[in-house]
Each structure stands twice: as C-alpha cells, then as structure tokens.
Length: 231
Image 1 (cartoon, rainbow, N blue to C red):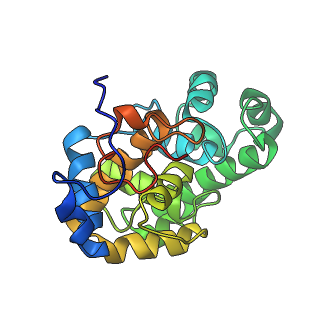
Image 2: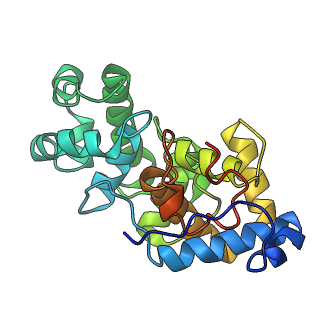
C-alpha cells in the first residue's frame, strides 16, 4: 500500500478549498476520494448465492467477517438452502456456529428467517427493505447490506462500527446512534454515492482508519481529515 506524506490536518495551499466547503460539500469530497480508492467495494463475507449471503450477514452481527467465514462452510454443507435450514435442529445449528458471538440466539434467528422466507416470500428474498426487515435477525443495517450486495439497490447507507468511527473522525457526524448517523449521512450525500460510500468506508475503517493506531500515513483522506495524526 502506498504511503501518503504526513501533513497536518489544517488549511494548506493544497487543501484550503476543502476547509472553505460546507458540510455537505465536504461529505461528497470524502465520498469521491473513497470511491477512487475503492471503485467497486464488495463484502468480504464469502457466499455463492442470496441464501448464503443473507445467513452470513445475520451471523456477522457483533462478529467479524473473518470469523463468520470460518463457520459457514460447514453450516452450508449441512444446510445448503432455505428449505434445509428451515427444518434444521436448533442444537445442531448452534453447534456448527458456536464460534460466533451470541450463537444460540443467532441459530434461532436464522432458522426463523428460513421459515419466514418460505412462508411469506415463496423461498426467495424480497427486494424490499421493509419486507427484508420482517426476517428474524435482519435489522436495517443487515437489510442495507443484502440489498446493496445482491442487487445494487441503495435505499440507505450501511452504518456499522467502521462507518460510525470513520464518519465521526472526519467530522461528518457527532451522533452515536446508528440510525441517526445513517440519517445524517443520507442528508449529506447524494443518493448516487450511498452504495459506494457504504462499502468503501467499511473497508477504509477495517484496514486504514482502524480503531487503534489508525494508519494516517497511508490514508487518502489525511490532508482533509480533522483527526489525522491525532488519534
């Protein structure tokens, strides 16, 4: 990864225009820089179809993608589709996913989601945010991920721990609640940026703007970030 020159996060000859922008203009500048760095961001959850993605997303709540990817091969080998999962024994499912956080509750929810997909949606995920959120284990963030990854539909912005942290450090939000952060970002950014901003900011937070010891020297935003070299 290329190393960026360490610059103070204050107005200079090269970034003076940014500091004169209003908040909406700053947000779109950030979105453009991240889009250039990650033109086609994709989830790191390993999947081959909508069933596998949806289940993986449900398992990823408060669990890393890496850990989810470690348990799903055995889970999907045993229960390869919604029909198989809907009739699964909860203890067997829990045993297969026990490495993820809150595995007992998640076992119950993914089985419940499978039954809901079969009973309400004829075995196929609905391309609708409200309907997706009727599935056990699918809240707004998960529904956003599923819709963006499977169909490229952006009805909102994915707000996970990475997006929350990066947005706060950039001064785009001071909110703590994910729903309020999403609302603020949606108001700041044109809808055309929502899909890319979601994925690129997740990756940026995971690998560059990390919770501890962020790699400001490698960051494409280090000339305009008010938190650069200060965390």
